Image (tube, rainbow, N blue to C red; front, side):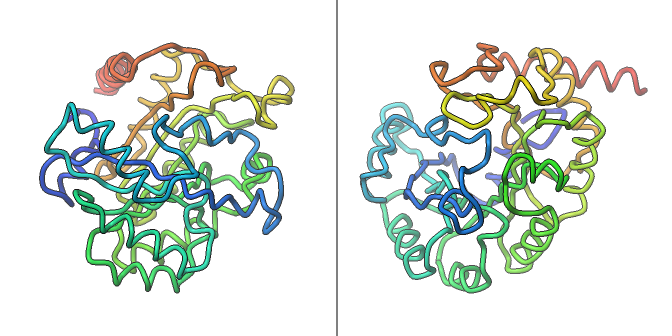
Length: 297
């Protein structure tokens, strides 16, 4: 438990008994801003291989991906229970019947106690929300919002608006599901003022969790070829910790924070190459928060 903010383990403890671990599942569904539904090319920063665990293979079925994930953790945590995390690309970009078959397959695996579905705010029809209500285990839904500024969303080729995020989060919460949003810090043209505005706008939404991470410039992405010509702040670890600390002071205290940093494989990463472990960044963040709070006394 962190003294400075509500962490994700506190949120999970409110919904599940005992220790639970997310198992990432790649269904290969793609995204509407890649396949021509809304656009092509995808988000300018996105390379999904950056967050696909080694044991996760798209060619495998849902059950086998879960089995491999459980084997990865079983040696160290034999009594662990699991959340099937539909993570890569847009995990609702398919017909409702296809989606529900995959979700039910995941929930039928031994030790799986719930679902986390990662998707976009323009890919959650009411028909799917209604179908998800029929499942007999908890479902958490996370939306990639990234920013509340439509000029930024256009620049990064998200192909959705902040207004769509607001509307979909409201519908999802009204349907009874805990909602999370993902935000990227340091997007082109965004200074502290713009990022703080996004956090304050998130405060106005019925969200339970937020996932922050720094903008990473990855090989094989459109951003890799143009980032030097864009207005992008290159943060040191200490500067980024200070940024997160200041944003924490803006965030509603009941919103749990899942993470502050992303960890792309070093061979894929152009910038920032910090080389920090999570606990090392956590120490920097706690120090920055304590400094700010002492200054504000």
